[in-house]
Length: 587
Ligand SMILES: Nc1ncnc2c1ncn2[C@@H]1O[C@H](COP(=O)(O)OP(=O)(O)O)[C@@H](O)[C@H]1O
Ligand SMILES: [Mg+2]
Image (cartoon, rainbow, N blue to C red):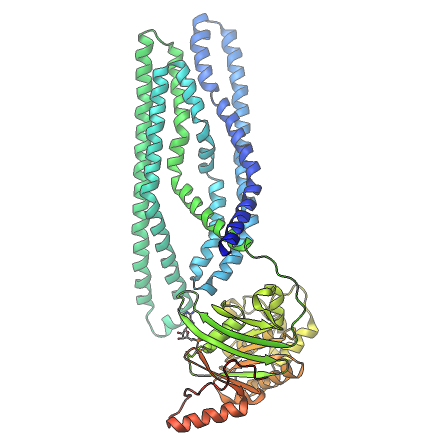
């Protein structure tokens, strides 16, 4: 079943690219053919000059031939220009079509445990292909199929010379394949080292404050230097391989060209060929070998573009796999967690096992438990950031996966544990980049988050630019803007992960009021809490420990149970409590 859909999706992704570029590829093939036929002009000219103009001594013949040849050269030039412009435009078209898709994927990848460097590489893939399309690489590739044309031409002038050219082309092709085999692994390793290096650079830049405050910038630089060394070594080796083969192929081509001249001279002396033919062979054979030579010279670009294209194709396949779900009505009744297990996407380690509970409209849930117990993991599953391994999360009975992602976002408000704000204005952050500013909804959200006054006191008010990661604000301010963002548009479910971590008493009050308001308007509030003061406004409590839901039920019972457990073990902190209910459904 799954494999059929995969095959279908692959087919569709491929199909999309193929339809886009097949027509142009065919056109490029034929235009390259015309260019290559016209490129025989030089050879014919030589033949005619030596065998006709020189022997007859006729200046008018020479003149007519020359004018004809100049005309043909002009044609060739025009076709060459058309072809290179076309290639550049294909590159740009490719970019326009794929850049948004690639960016979408890079935005998604960090969720699944990829480094931001690896993720951004997808975006760079598009650049790589566009750059390649504007280089000599594709010209060489489109000229390659026309190499036999020149070999045939030489063959008709003299079979021995034709065979010699064919042999040369064969050896050069072998050399190209060898280059490819030798450089492929190295290039991939160099690419990996490049990513590692960038990850270290990225991490150092993000921790600039700490590096300065605790004086280990020097050591951070040496760590960067180490991985940079690795990258350089691999890069050098890959370039060496390609460079060496490139030089070899150039020398080989020169030897071959001289050999053709020598053998041609011998055949002319023997009276088997005209002197004009020697020059014609020389010109035609150099044209025959040029694309192969050029392909070797541009092999780095070819390899890079092919790797990029392969990755992008996988990307397209992954995306075309997603069908747009049916538009479901806004949820308003319940949130059911149906025995979910959740694993960390990067390592596959199971972090949450068989968690089940149920909440109805108007309820508020406090999630408590020790650090590292799995509270944030539960929140990630509830918001769909991490997919569940098993089980389902249902809004009004419909599994999260049945909802259109953008629509679902309107029904779920989320305040992450580490609030990161977008580089933009306060309004852009709160409205989640909505194209229209709905002043009423914005102020309702900021008032509910108790942050309206703070915002209007800023010099630019709601249009204050927050800078990268929202660095223009304090942690507490960021958290409250984050809360306003979660509350914006009155989503059905509002999930807050340790929202009081940076809040003062006033902020905590605002938060409690917000929870009360969510419940009063028939929403569901879920709040992960460390400090019990936050539990004032919830009616249900869940305890998450060691990746399991160890207790779930009305607040009074659970809190009493916790107290009992603490007395029993005679120790502070939370201890394991027997699960009160098997599958939840308390409401
Ligand atoms: N991205 C991740 N990859 C792998 N393991 C993770 C990841 N995030 C959290 N964990 C692990 O999952 C466990 C639960 O973490 P978390 O849900 O953040 O705990 P809590 O929010 O209760 O403090 C911890 O042991 C943590 O090491
Ligand atoms: Mg957490």
